[in-house]
Length: 460
Figure 1 (cartoon, one colour):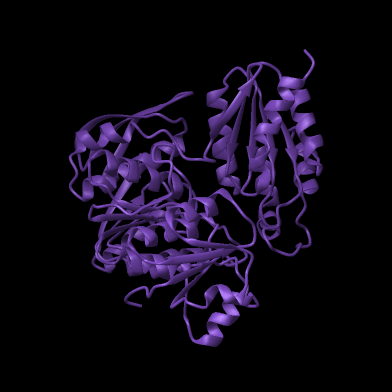
Figure 2 (tube, one colour):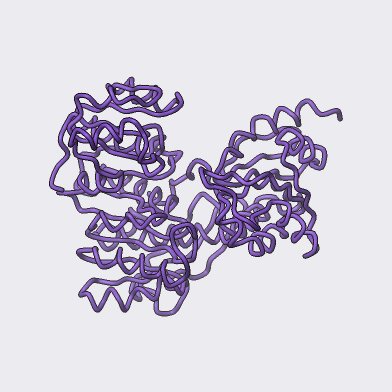
């Protein structure tokens, strides 16, 4: 596909990815319309930007469209999608639309099972600081930019490349970052071989070079594959063979520090304003990419240090009576483990209380034991019901089973399907100096304001 034909209609325009692409299309001068099932702030923002927005789906909404972009959450029986196909209107996926927008730019796709949103955001904020005004499309919202997409005036376009359905092969970027490769999205990938093949397929579409994590076996394994295809291949991490080598690392409660060496030459000390060893790796990936496109190292390091985080990535949502409430998107055992470890750094003398909502039945069934192992490191865990995200229940997928396994491993957990009761239990357990962490990819993110109100209302 060579170009988008306007007017463009987005089915499911309220999602983070879809709304971001729609905003870029509007800024490029396309006539844009879109629909979604429920109203939202994203829809209001798009209306203010000039889009024609509908709440609810109806075939009449696509009457003038020449291109229809469809979200992966939309089913074939959707009235607008059926109407578009019947009328012979060009129907494309979100990934195909974004791939078209990347043409003509130096494009960078940031992929990986974990850390891609933060890494994409770090790279974007660094490039903005360097005055390069990149275009970008991110699956989260950096605090610094307050937007998850932007049509920039510069020559670079940075995009978060989601592996969940394999559609990231549509992008054909000049460069790709792969932060790590681990089994996830078991509804789409049957095993480790399948997920490895997907990332190899991504690398096979890259035009110039790849940035890979030397400390992650799945990512590092792609280096030989990339070189066989004639691509530049750069490694980052603490491993001795890394091109961007991390050493003298220290992670504290509010920042992380390390020494960066690029191909044997010491660049200097790097300070990032967020905690966590995993974020050190994310920052190293972003820094390596800026060096590959010939940005000055000292300036890149300085601007990387201004990055202040991303929404729903260990985000402080407020505090009350000396109890801080954080929210995080973690929904894979590896992510859960890293997030709880970060919480320990932030509250070294307090307790970590987790309200966790498993995301998807298929993931819960596949990783039940691993979730229990990761969650047991919290002081108290409240397991909510599984957030199905449109999936049908899977035999063996059970929040109650995870809770029981946590207790069997020596942790402390209860299964509490009632949200208000879970909030009450967390608040009653918490005391000054503790940290309450809501975690998961579902609607658990709505709980922090209620938690803070409940703490304030609690009797001393």
